[in-house]
Every structure is written in structure tokens, then in C-alpha cells.
Picture 1 (tube, helix red, strand yellow):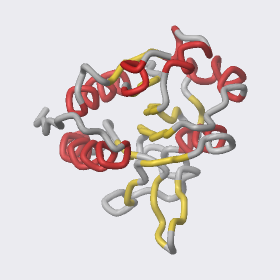
Picture 2: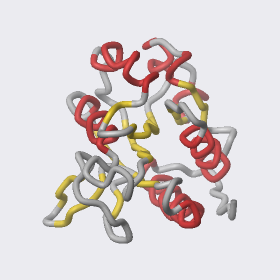
Picture 3: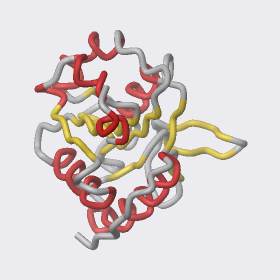
Length: 187
């Protein structure tokens, strides 16, 4: 692995309608397009994961708690990836009103696979400001209920996404220990 690649972040996403892809590019603009390599999970193999020590994994939840189709096709490969020595952050998209009983479930399922071998999970996010009934993406950390990663709802709260992205990117920038400049974006 080259030294340049070791400093980069591999951002892997799955997207059927383009929202998660758009969010991935918005994250890259904030953290630095020169250090974030964006990959569509539908076009990669396990080998691409070997190039990185830092990851952001983006996944939307479909319908009644279903995994996005490209992630579903990659799931068996994902289960065979060794994330030891790696730092991983998650981004989940969902519809908290239309599917409030399953909000961000796919992110929770993705987290549960990766946490089996990952050394460090970062980017936990507060549950305040959301209105949902249940989520597999909730975790309790120090007696506080959090999401396992950034929670976005492009269906019901798109006007909040820019500010949430700015705050979360500042958070993961610090948690990844990056020394590159960060950019706050109003998009």
C-alpha cells in the first residue's frame, strides 16, 4: 500500500435513486476531494477495500427495512472483508415518516457486519431532531442513545441535510485525525 493511499478515505456507497451518491459527493467536498475516493459498491470487489485504512460506508434503507440492492449483492463479499486495523464511519439515509418503524435499519445491519472485525467505529450521531418509531441503527454509548452514523432523511428533511453534513464532517474529520483543511459547504 502506498503512503498516499494510506492517508485517503475510501467512501463506498450504494444508491438506486441517486440520493446516497449525491450525499457521498457532498461529504467529499467537505472533507477534501483530494483525500476521499468515492466508490459505487455496485462496481467494486473486495480488493478495493484493501487500499484504505479509513472508510465511510453509505447506505439507504429501502421500504420495510431492506438493504439497498447493490449492497445486498455485495453482502457476502462484505462479510469476508477484514476490517481489523481500520477506522469506519457510516452514513444512512431513510424516510422517518413513511417508514418510521424501519428508519435507517440498513445502516444498523451494515454496522453489525463491519463491527465484527473493525478496530474503531467513529461518527456516532445524536437521535434528537428525528421523528421515527424504531431503528436497527440505534446504539447506546455511555447511557446515551445514538445512531451508528450520520442519519439523513432526504425525503422528509432535506433542508436539514447541509447543516447535518457540515457538523458530522467536522466530527469525523477530528475522529479520523485528519490534518487536511476542512470546508463547510452550504449546498
